[in-house]
Amino acid sequence: MSGQHVQDQETPWFADTAVQPLLTRFHVDFKPGSSLPGWPGLVLATLVALAGSLVADVLLVALGTKVFPSTNGYAHFHVQSYAKLTVIGVIIACAAWPMVTRISSRPRWLFFRMAILVTIVLLLPDLWILMRGAPARAVLVLVAMHLAIAVVTYNALVRLAPAGRSVTPATG
Image (cartoon, rainbow, N blue to C red; front, side, top):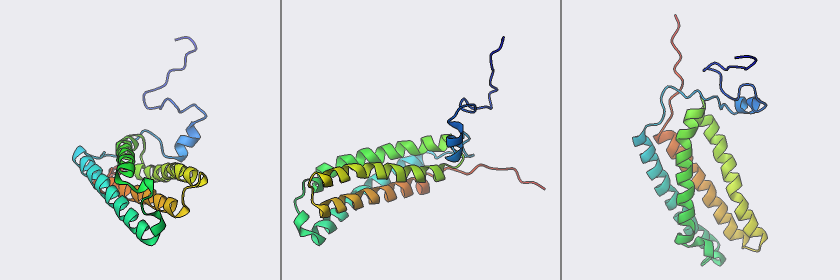
């Protein structure tokens, strides 16, 4: 092998790239903990996240229209409008959690930051419709719905389908 660099199997493909410092900072090290979330836990967490998020949506819309009567009948407050988006978002998050547990030795730490980032990104359409003339009070309820979905989904996943920590041998 004249002049070719051969990586050993322990060295990740990105070890010699400019991306390495960023991946290291976010604990993307492809060293999962000793136990990954099991399927039964993932299924339960997904069902709890879906049900909890949809219930939170319904309650927030009810509360929002009670506190802000002018928002009653707002198009985005119809169940068929928000339910499908909620289900899609929760399913994506639930699919992401086991992937994160496989690429990080600190999956909960990474997933928490990813949840914050994704939630911020998902608030951009709310900002867009606000700038396009949507009632501010209605948008406030939509923001609360996004935040509730994030909290419910994150907690369902990390508590009901936890990833184990790396096991280090006891010394002494």
